[in-house]
Amino acid sequence: MKSKFTMKDLGLANQFLGISIEYTPDKYFLSQSQYAQSILQMAELHNYNSVANPSSSKPPGTNDADSPCFDALQYRQIIGSLQYLTLTRPDIAFAVNALSQHMHDPAIHHTLLLKKLIRYIKGTTDYGLPIMRSSLQLRTYSNADWASHPLTRKSTSGFCTFLGDTIVSWTVKKQPTVSRSSTESENRVLASATADTIWIKRLLADFHISHSQPVDIYCDNTSTIALANNPVFHGRTKHIEINQRFVREHILNNVIRLLPISTTDQIADILTKPLTTPRFKILRSKLTIGPRSSV
Image (cartoon, rainbow, N blue to C red; front, side, top):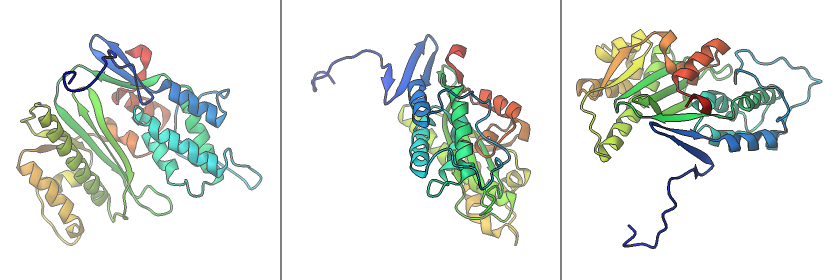
């Protein structure tokens, strides 16, 4: 390229769009510590104590005399910044997604939950995403929290894909329509996870990294697995037939392999619902998200 363009070799990259890149003999470590600190300064919470969990399983109690922690404009500014922070922090992806759904009109308890999330970030500013030297085998975890939204009763989809020991893709999304059963909600996220996994597999092929074996996709819903492997459609499942046939086709073509996994080992749980602190810490470690010192 130097023969065609005027270029200057600046050596190894240390910063890229606010993402810090650190090198060790067998790993890279991506973090946004300085960016996280700027969010603390924006929220004026840098002097508060940290917490161990970004989410709360119960909405915080409020009364009419309480005032919001942030005004609507500040709420939207902080949420926008947090969305960029999730580039290296999938452990906060669910909390950010849940709070992003109320940017148009945040209530007092939403600002309290945002305050808790920022206090969690305060204690984990040096956390980041390691890229480790390992095998180049893909595996995906797919999960849904059925009818989790208290007002609309729409489900939350969550899936993540690992390349060897490194997480390379993750998604948290509220499903666009209401699912009539947990099987339907799991089936929707499974179809999305399958499409994303196939895209990553084709991207690896562009880098001449072949992946001849079927990609393992782990799902903890036995009805969804049974229906994918034996598509007997009847009145209760006809409405999910299109997604199921999409998944079934790729199973038959040996593109993916759908495997059962216990709910305890389902890593994608951290992307679909608030968890207790011990459970959250276990799944966060399985996502490989941790402090710089661990690298």
